[in-house]
Length: 519
Image (cartoon, rainbow, N blue to C red):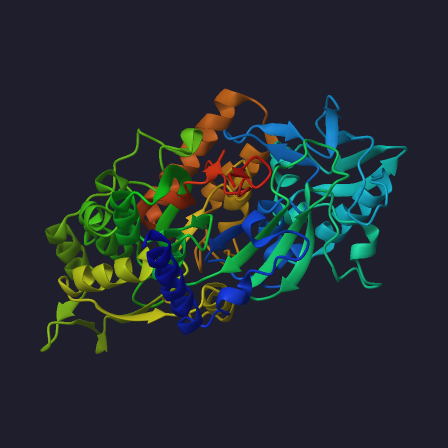
């Protein structure tokens, strides 16, 4: 009877997968391993291609590719493909010593020349992270990679741990240096590749490090939270990331899977077009912020009462969380007063008007993070109470940067990870340069802020660095180019058969190399 029930549940789970536009049970393609030996990972992130700039995070998460430098769970640099490094007294020359005995998945040897080629490709990518570092040149000297800087740059190690700087074999590249296939050095090599929804990885027997217990794994992108939860509950998936809050509670109560949760350096925030006529005044952005009931959203939607964001950086981002600044609070009367002082008056339908123009804006978000559309609905209602009409556009996450680039974004609700680079200054440099960033500022800049971040990237003095961070955070809190809503927790449902599972607070690694699946 138990076997029949499990079979029926598995069938229903797979039917839901089909209904959601994902190939059904046949997404498990055993290849060289028996189906029982295949480890199945499900997450919401689509596979956009082989370029590190588009899907490099997935190749890093599945340990197909590796970087010159790694990071521990506190963001501190660790040796990876570089076994050690040295920096000159003036901070402008870094020497990385290549780990000996490493081979790519095609059997070719890892050399300083192959690393230099991969890094120079990353450096030349328009809009790429590495291009934001003041690099004067990258060259090989024997089996040492030499990075020469125009000026000292403290976060260089963190930049070299970013997924877009992964080291691929020379054969990965076409003649024009576009990536045609992913040939890395990790404990797993790429198997079947079927974007945008799935790919497989196979254990690489000649890996330089510890041999993984898992022989083969499959990755499936499933955008709907309920789909992912059902795949976990039915046993069709071994490791499922990004549970929606309701599913998380249900799975915890059901006891069929283990539910993991960890605070991570990610914040749900509202990206504001500070050049929009209705949003360009700081007072108006303060009003939008004051109208938000963060505690209510955190408790009712996220089921995490303490997750309301009183500032941009959560406490988990230690040196960037500033306890000295005044917290963002919920104050509807203050919001109404600020809007009135800005010249807004209620129209016949209750929506504010100024100079004949209604205060009506579009809030763009995406369902990859299942809580975001729910938070958007709550914001829509809370802003309606102060006279702001909001239309919700729930679409693909790619629309946020697209609308940023063409200037049509008004408000965007996103979940921003401040540890894409182990040192958050890397994300800050991407998101808040004077010209703005796809996931950060839009039509906002501040000379004092830019100067503080520039100085921070140059200094190695801890006290000076902390003072600069505190100054930068205070400016963001005062001017609100983005409006924090909630701090984030990463969640996962893990099969009871899986041992060694844990969540990476920097979201760099699914942990395939350290997990094992009991028979």
